[in-house]
Length: 177
Image 1 (cartoon, rainbow, N blue to C red):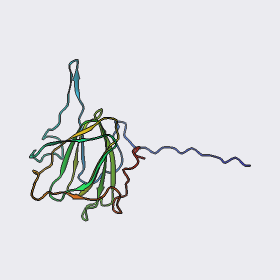
Image 2 (cartoon, rainbow, N blue to C red; image 1 turned 135 degrees about the vertical axis):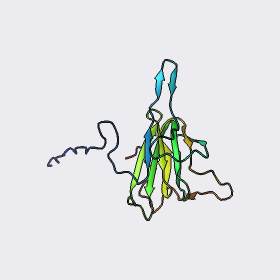
Image 3 (tube, rainbow, N blue to C red; image 1 turned 30 degrees about the vertical axis):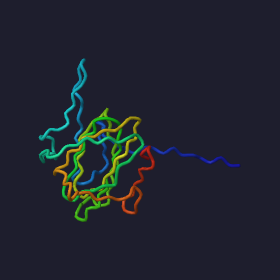
Image 4 (tube, one colour; image 1 turned 135 degrees about the horizontal axis):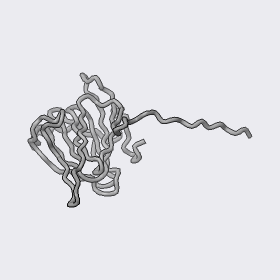
């Protein structure tokens, strides 16, 4: 029996020398990495700074969201507000899908993992579908700062099932591959 020749596959570049992804981002998505300021007493990490680029809308509502290990929230989308999410604790994987008719990045999918080791504020523009999965071993916590207050009588929330024909991503694979 002839031996099959296996040719190793070489990785393509995926990040810059600073560790930033080179993948194209959905129009309007902002990721503000926020390093901790540490000393012998512990650490301080900024959660909000109105001077961060692309995050100049005022804070009008704030909530804390906990996602249990192995669980997924999504798919959701808003038409009147942008979402701003600050990952505080755990390891969370976000799926973002642009289905906005007038967007130059329509059809683009971004999958991002943000952790408490590399915290960040993530801005998701209105009209972009998004979901979050806890891929860690502890509760994942993010602070939710939408650009408009929650309307209890008329929520600005549209949902799709996790498995659907629109979004080409399956949260079922917790490895992200």
